[in-house]
Length: 500
Ligand SMILES: Nc1ncnc2c1ncn2[C@@H]1O[C@H](COP(=O)(O)OP(=O)(O)OP(=O)(O)O)[C@@H](O)[C@H]1O
Ligand SMILES: CCCCCCCCCCCCC/C=C/[C@@H](O)[C@H](CO)NC(C)=O
Ligand SMILES: [Ca+2]
Image (cartoon, rainbow, N blue to C red; front, side, top):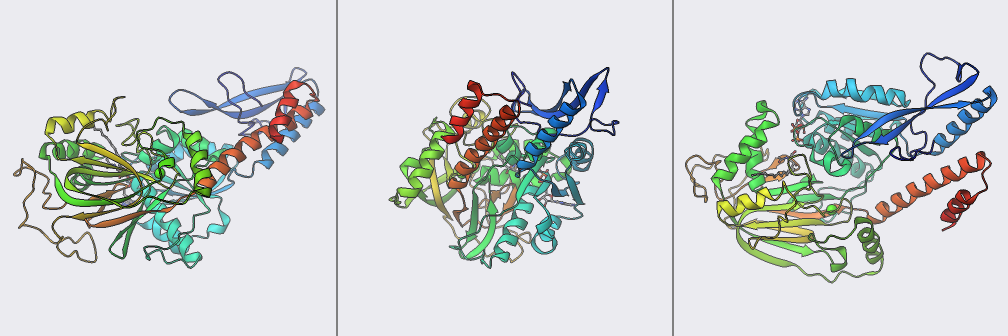
């Protein structure tokens, strides 16, 4: 089915016999019909499943069409058949299980996808299961029902498993990590759901389920975070020190409040107005990889980056900036979310091997408020004298004063009564001491001194996938036009597109 107008050309993306009709088709007063389910784009990047009924003049013709449609669908090998689903029942508003059962499972079933479901019983259950136990050979993908923290768990499980299977030591700072072969689908059921929003364009469980069903995919960069030579975590969205670190650290104590905890802790961190002294050093990305303030089209930039990454030799050198910072944010993707629809760095790309490093220096409360406010509207949040932004491949942060030794288990932090915050409102503040902590995709890192590098990235893969998807669609169109006996200009156009 080739859609027109609002309906889009995802051919027969969901195909099933009409329920209640055991035969191949239904007969409606001499007309033979069969339904095709397809994805329809609606407003705000949301997708819905629609049904089109096709009628034929004879049973044989109907049968032929069903056969052709099935054949075409079987050619789409990127569509998953078997999935491993992890549900965090405590993420966001604790609706993960219900969201999956009511909105996602029926659509998977309709599309003929079978799913093994695990409802997690503790934090890191999904990570541990993926790292050591799960028989991944039998699945075409993993589905995460939860928020950014849950996604991070699954990412850590899959990355660790991939490195273990390939005998790569992920703790070695320069290790060349192997990309994961299994895709992770995200059904948003958390508090921020920034990774879902920034990749899909909306936080809507049905839209996510449909993206999974049609086999959509989007490679993304993974940063590795080390403290000296010790591996701490991976990050795919935000690494934030200062403001976002303080917001997260405070909000963890208010988990019972659900998503509202971030608003409360956000206001608190804003009122505290803490700043932190330290040195940021970074390796800038080459000029041809674009700048965070560019307005260039993503695909053009991507192809140019890919081309240059094949022929160019890196000529950048490390830059060092010392100062007092209210926030240091590394955005590996736009970090868009409902609170900030264009995100912390609107033109940060998903799989370009770079992150956007945003440095917000000490400024007045009013100026910081203006900067924050611009995350919610169309004004440029980087257009302030106290904000600078760099596209980087690696960066290090070193706090000015050395941090007291941390215990092995980061949650057992030593109390720091001797330190006092540098901010102005000291008595009621989130205690910042001389150091903040890092917000790593919504998980706290207590080490202030970190070294970050883009560890898994694949620009070529992104370009290849986009071209492959186009080819699939054109090939399917040509087959259908041929099946219809068309030899007109439409077929010629598509044939020449294919040759091209
Ligand atoms: N069964 C469980 N019990 C307790 N914690 C769990 C369980 N399963 C997963 N977790 C942990 O819950 C944490 C938060 O989960 P999640 O990210 O789904 O929700 P959130 O924090 O509300 O959303 P967001 O990260 O989008 O702000 C994760 O770090 C995850 O490790
Ligand atoms: C005065 C108006 C203030 C509005 C401030 C809007 C800025 C919001 C920007 C939010 C960016 C969130 C980036 C995502 C971080 C996630 O990794 C994490 C875990 O889900 N969430 C948070 C809130 O730290
Ligand atoms: Ca990136």
